Image 1 (cartoon, rainbow over the protein chains, first blue to last red):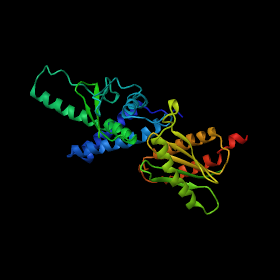
Image 2: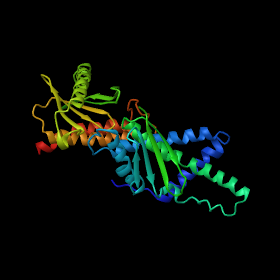
Image 3: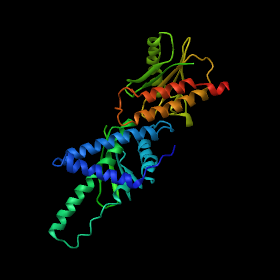
Length: 172
Length: 143
């Protein structure tokens, strides 16, 4: 098998998808656009987890499933593993990727030395657009985990690009 | 000869069930598949195996009846595959191989973006692929 996908095509497709949902379909309702994009990611994650868990024994606990997401699943998607996994052992996991592939093409905010007021507004705007691009990977993680029998909520944090951390909260 | 295969979702909802007999015993076969679900649950909740075979997807022979042998397979996503055969001596490797190919066909079917998760699999391609796999079952051991 070993089919390949062009990386730049995927990058462009994702960018275009986010922009279409945010600027055309739901131009005035960013929450709705976010929810739709997350739902697409959910379906993708759902289907991918089915494929990537094919040749492995079943997971015995949550941690094992999360580890699978961090190692094998991430390697299949991004050709690298999650760099850091933290947990409070009570159902919250933080998955940190120091160089998240889908954010590497984004312009990083310059250090706020200029200090002008218009800059801060642009920065806030940038942040909003960047976080919009993270609903898709969040959905992928949530879809994969819920298909493995772990209902959860996933959010993303981009305080220092291009590092990105995903927070997984497992619903009791 | 395989007389029936089934895919059962994680809530024990039937996703695909197909019998391969000429006789009118579909109802009986469906009943056998239904009964096997309890055995699957029992196997999973009270694992007797240990070591590397623990949590293996292939569950082995679930139970033999007078005329049939029922095999099970449970994926990571809690989807069950059931195989009912009339063969009396079946090689384990053949069944494993069958489930492997069946699983691949299933994954391809649910990866279809138009397939709704948790709903019955209506894909004609899947049905054709399954019947090919069923027909080729055990042929390797004959040759």
